[in-house]
Image 1 (tube, rainbow, N blue to C red):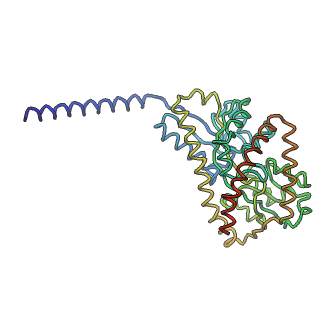
Image 2 (cartoon, rainbow, N blue to C red):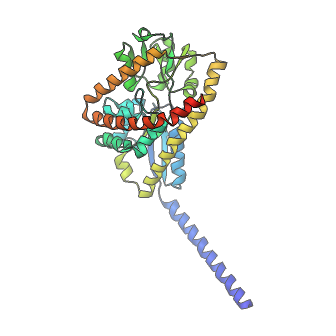
Image 3 (cartoon, rainbow, N blue to C red):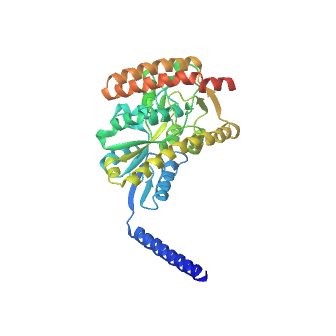
Length: 362
């Protein structure tokens, strides 16, 4: 019996020693493997709440999940390139990744606007459903394929605010001649009703509004607007964000760089992007509440709802503009038709589910 116990102990000790040697050898091999290093350029100020933190969290998650095999360094707008040059930088391989909003690239691919948000379109929940199970991701990849870019959903801000104004909006006449920072199709709608849309990166909004270079601006919502101090430059804060009801952000990935990754790292990049896409929406859902309370109760911001007749006219004009612009570009028309078909279905269901419950709760 003693012999058997001794033999068993000896075998266990030898096995433990082998395992330790194997572990040490594996750690040595892993240490000798040079990590892959990527650059990620964003359209946001470095470490800006919400928008700017999403790519930072993504980079941290990828490095941890890959055990350090893939390291991504994040650069804010202006550090490597201006905010609106991220798409070209990823396409050309200057950087391997970007984080931005698809409607910034409407001059390169008009259909891209559908993958951020369109006036009176899908909300955040509906956008995520479209991307994942409704065919939106496949269409998005088709739009970006000529540029050598793989797009992935990279967060959502939820329904945005209507914006900051230095004068009250009581009727459609008040929009005529209004110089407003308003990108994407929302800007085209503003132009149609007599306003002047302006495209500016976020870091320039406060100064432009304060100096009178613009009369109004939309950005995101209370969480980000408070951080930018926009309440110090305009009196009136309007809602709802008819122009962006569910603003999706994007991760841009250079296709060649992505294809060069081992399969497991490709899966990690996609998995981390999916996690961050939901994480951003979760954060905005919480942070907007406290920020709006601060704006109204501490800073005396005048919260206003757009008049119903103004919204009705904007809705009508939006439908006209979207249809007209889509008809001018075959790819945009293809995306528009697919988007519209999905939207009609999800609206029918949400009329008796999400929308019905919201009315009931009120």
